[in-house]
Amino acid sequence: MDFGVTKDKQLILFDGICNLCNSSVQYVIKRDKKNQFMFAALQSDVGKNIINHFNIDTSKVDSIVLYTPEKGITTKSTAALKVASKLGFPTNILSVFLIIPPFISNWVYDFVAKNRYKWYGKKDACMIPTPELRNRFLD
Image 1 (cartoon, rainbow, N blue to C red):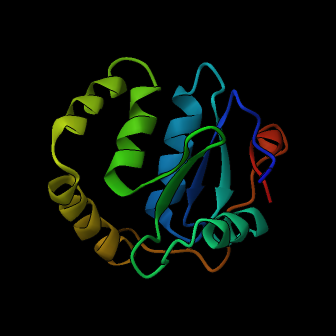
Image 2 (image 1 turned 60 degrees about the horizontal axis):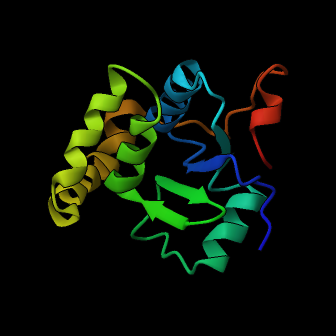
């Protein structure tokens, strides 16, 4: 299925109302020198289509999904670490944590995800990209 992502890109689905998630998207944008990533809120039409297509249980995965046209989806800590691995030094050093079994790294990830609104707050609506970043976001 075509979600509007070309084969040379990866799509990061994020919680559009989460302040931590929005800050993380800004962090990736600043460090994505090769322009490898596109973005969409989980709440967007594209986000909902991917969630439905891959039967993602949003009660278990509600903060990050990495979609690659050729490989499908990756979620939680593995998705975050795969994104980090593409961002260059020193952020790419975090990819060393991919050796940790997902049941351990996802436990840490889930703890942060569960508390993200309490610690970082949330918005009433999804972030609206600036005109210069608009082409990196899917609706």
